[in-house]
Length: 378
Ligand SMILES: Cc1ncc(COP(=O)(O)O)c(C=O)c1O
View 1 (cartoon, rainbow, N blue to C red):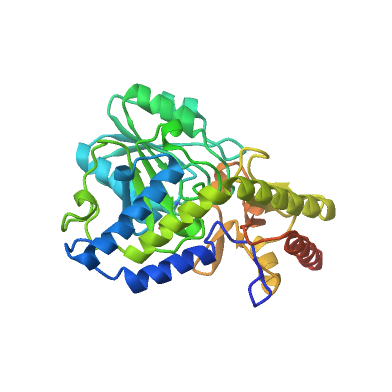
View 2 (tube, rainbow, N blue to C red):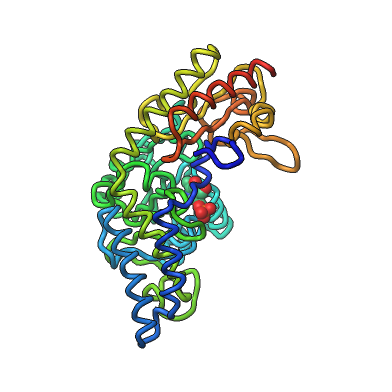
């Protein structure tokens, strides 16, 4: 996408622009579905119907039943509910996760570690992928939950979720998958993946921010983390954000319709960008698996430079992310890249370029030229 600023947007794993169709549905919903879905009059029923339509649309995209979808404020809340909600149910026990999870998974887990729960943090290989056999080997008698992400936000690396799901189901252990980055980009099927809980985040696939959902299989018991009235069957109390729910539903419908073309087109464009960069900058290195990766994501390390300096130089040309986290003005190497065995210098030289449905070939060629020129200038 080229915004009016002329800056090419290549940061779609951070967030995506709201699709025109989604914005239209939301605006209409804000105007006409103002009733409280809990009210029994005409306006309440209208709003309730919009919420239930949204629920069906989300369920359809991931092959779930509508009654298994619980709306919430986004991925952070959905991840917290799956993890803390399971811990509250069991009161003690052991949890298996990986060292490449998003902070909205690692921080609730660290919170639980401080309260007597134990956590196994599984390593990843050089491609940033967890080994499902490691999951099986880590299971203990008191394991209450396995939580592994579907696709990594920095590298796009796709994790062995179906294998892990089969192990979890065989052992009777609840399995949560943070699918914030995969839903809307690649097919996600909760039946095939054998998950008990799955997080999805609307603003990662052209829906509004502050909206997400947790899939909860059948009677997988979860305790709430918020207490209030009976909304969302008491699992997530609070008056529903009707327009956002209409938006997330509409984004799911759009994703279902576009899935094949979206995936194919993004892969072609991402491959083209990497090919151009590799031709011009021979030492660059792809961080992540060459194939088991989100079609839109390329994370690359550039020889002998700082990713943040490169991005700073490119600020009028492209919007993207570095592989580092900024703390008090200092750039620290990404823990995800470090877990894959990259040196500090390699991790600090990385850029994450994440493409979206609005990018086109011309923009990609222009971005490749701009990156090459900025790299040479540095
Ligand atoms: C993998 C992953 N999980 C969870 C989240 C959290 O989503 P939100 O910030 O919308 O709550 C993100 C957002 O960046 C993410 O990339």
